[in-house]
Length: 424
Image: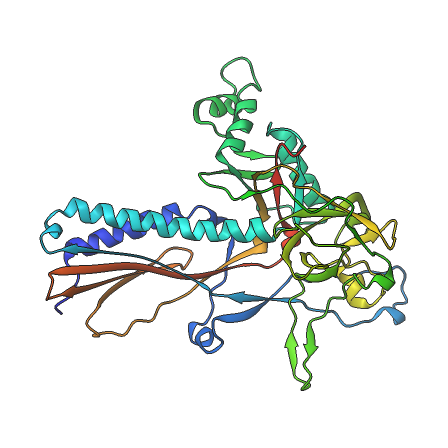
């Protein structure tokens, strides 16, 4: 074929694929779900993934009145990211193999960064657990605060990860380097020599060379919400809903629209608590004694917000509410105060449990013998890297492009969150 890849180009692609996989740091810390690509094409790259069940238990031998249907919740998953790095070279520039290699390296780094960034964005924007630290990062106490909010709400113990901005990570390492005033202490030495934190309080930490930042919440003081049953701000989970035509469709139970006194200056990403609504353990339903944290997903109107997670109090006493209850109404009122937590601009440092985030590899189907040469390879996670090449006889220019297709979904925002420092 006229556009066939040379041996040198194939070797360069293999090197690019290897380096691409090495650079996929965050994607190795989430779960992978491979889907049928033919089915995905027929469903516009959207399909529904189940959330974990939460079971209930009762006392005594007689369970006659306790049999009820289990509500299986699901989440829409989309293969919605297509990233491409294109470039072109002339027939004389191709004589410089080093230049060609540098361009491939740059494409590899950018695409790997795009995938890592997509995971970072999903966790940072949708993670509902918010840990507010009033001082700069110091180390163990900060990570232990993340562990505490996860444990108190019944989040699985294993595969917990925390990604920190470089400045926050290095601040932790700085404190750890002082853990022992004498050399020979492994933790102190690594922190001093390599600014390394590692695993703390059962959570693996990682350093980011970039991190999302969040402005201070600008919503006015005195915002309130009606937490009484009559306020209709409590949510009842449901697996499906019926359209006006009678058709049944799945429901995304990760988000809820609530009504508050005013949404002026409230912005997506803001974190807040509601007076009297304490977080409960997802399994035992016992109050943690700490207020439940919520995130603003979007501002719908002058008085309505889309938030995450929904407020599931169990006040309606339906089986689904009791199964997925996440708050205990310690004190309910028609004007419960809303208090914002992100009070100072700063980095959003995401944390998550591995099973809560999924990456969905996609496949780009290019026809054979269509005048474009294609070479492809997959990482161990199934993420496919596709390189294309085409030559223009009129100009002597050779065009290259490297593509990836994938999706990222937050299956359970209550198993993910962010920690912010210096929030006075």
